[in-house]
Length: 321
Image 1 (cartoon, helix red, strand yellow):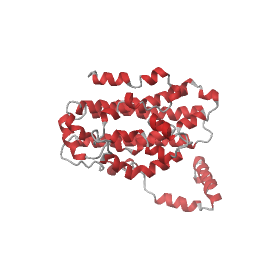
Image 2 (image 1 turned 30 degrees about the vertical axis):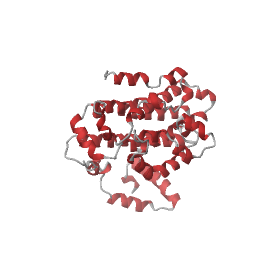
Image 3 (image 1 turned 90 degrees about the vertical axis):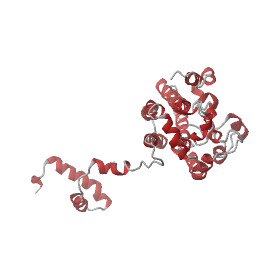
Image 4 (image 1 turned 180 degrees about the vertical axis):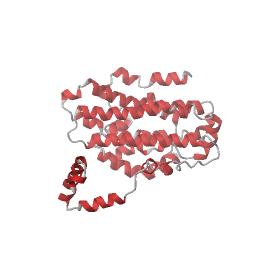
């Protein structure tokens, strides 16, 4: 009977037997199940019908669909990044080449997002945007928990705190204390009173516990921690340093400044529509020259620290975009 099968089929059957028999499984039963399994279609595999049904605008304004889809695409890219961060952190014997490979992927994802952000800057009618955006309060891209996870997975949690609060807490601070003093909280405060916006309050209610657990998990798994455990000669690898600097620039300068560019385009000329950002204090929160948030401070010169994002912001404010 074996002569009825091609040699390559018999080889695959032997491999399957080697896989299932040691586990006490009946190979014949698995093969019978395969016989009854239907062919896989592209639309079933990626759940295309479900994916295309996930756009549920709150208004009848056409460009709201663009707004929804772009943010959904962004979150999928963030999920791609987090998969790479997970594999970096869980690799107990990571090599420079593997770290470079995964950092390159993360940078590519962010570069794709940055290059595509003109969809938000120029791809929507300004009047339509301001109309439908007011119907989305207090929702804001500020509430993207995956972006916060990317930040935490990139660096020591202390690097995400304001310098004054970092110094006040000291080196023995808990994850709960550090999350409580994280930089982004200042970006969702009311400009007049300094109190937390509903945007921030709802975000904290939903995600604080999750972010604390994530921070604890990545304390020794974040990219900076992984990098610092490499042999000294590997830490001096020019390609690795360049890739880390690119990640720092992409996440902390280029990506927030694309949002700043969009905010300037739609909101700068009419201060009364500040609510269209979900109440976030975007003028102080988005520009890197104010936050000076840096994942890998040791990889930058003092001059680079002093001018962090400055040229980019001035270019936008001068209208050269």
